[in-house]
Length: 368
Image 1 (cartoon, helix red, strand yellow):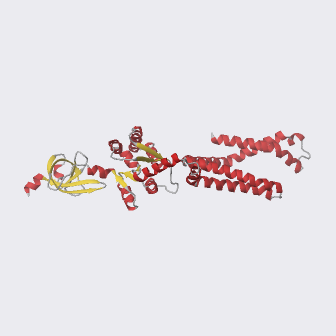
Image 2: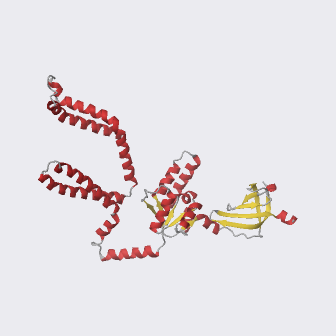
Image 3: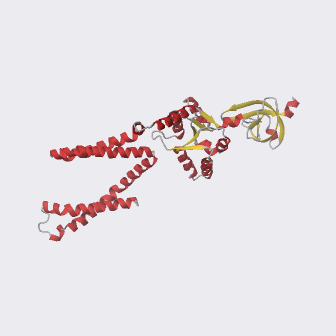
């Protein structure tokens, strides 16, 4: 549809230019001598101009449509404050350019009075657009400072003290949303403060939900359902962060940058992201750490009953699971696959990736 509209615009433009200028060009170049008068008609010129512009549109219209869609995508991804203040800056720059152009037009210097205003319009428009979009926070501060009343100052002081002494932002990543346990944790009140859902995380969730792979699609849809559940709970304060970092492509890197700039805490169950945050000095809450902390404590020497369900990585090992999902590696448990046996805990290994229990069959212990 956009392509057709652009083509129609340039066809009308070509017809208009042909109606006005082609007859004059014919007369100027003496092409009209020996030719019928109707060939120099403005309507013939309009038809010729429309045909010429129609042929030209097939050459450049696709590139123009692509450029417009790219510009549209950048505008849609940009925060609304950037677009608003950038537009105001552009208007201000064009007004200043117009005021500068008036004395230049009065001087009527050949060449300069006609060409220089075009450059001034472009340069000042672009300059003030960048100033408006990049300096929006400072401009907001300038606009609010003179008109701030005593009551507003009091409110500002209370907000400042709240941000200094209150809980930092909790910034969710994609993995913790898909996992689903975060909704129950928020409802219990163990996480205080504002829960931040970055827009780029929401885009990644939507991309996963639109995947052609059934498993990925189901995971993405479950993540979106979890977000809706959290947002509908009025006891949970949720904030959607609209900003983005165009110079960064990885979502995890954007989360780390956002946590650094806002002083927030990344909430995740991604082991690798956990390590990256620790390395860069960003506070992180790992849901797996919380799950491990509330699991029943088992100590070496205790006895458990477990069903061995498959082989382990090492020779003669068997693997079973507790009710909470904790994996138990049973030495010499290969022969007991499919059976429920009593085991004795030998050691416990606990990391951010989860907890692993090593044990050996009680029958083997008695035999020794």
